[in-house]
Length: 187
Image (cartoon, rainbow, N blue to C red; front, side):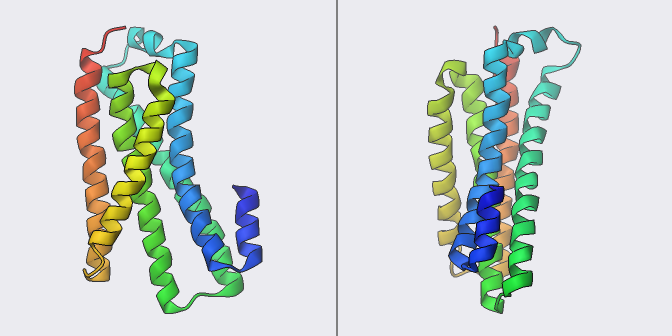
């Protein structure tokens, strides 16, 4: 990602910059989910953590907070690259609007990946991680793109608010759903 960021700033191409933003934000989100759950399944941490003096609610909360942390780490990383691009090459006003929309699309997709994958992981099991991640990634990108396309004729600030509101509501519902699933989970 660092090399792609340097390349996108050096090439002065807005298309590369938009791909960098989307891949960076979504990539950090996917990486956080894969790292947490792959490590959990290979080290048998899932069974061990239930013996610790923490509530299941705290375990689920930590998974979601970790996902959101890495999502915003991706936003910060890609925001730095985008800021450098703007500093060296500049943007027109219309391009600023499109860049913010690309960030909204990336954040929405990143949140939706976690909202879809985390409950599916606890429901489906560790042996289906890759399949569930692929389904989650495709669904999240499709839903985020649908949100962007459905709100095309809406005022720009309201458009961004709707995209973020739906995404944050999805992560809140997913947290509640995951909590219900994990409370009943037996190892």
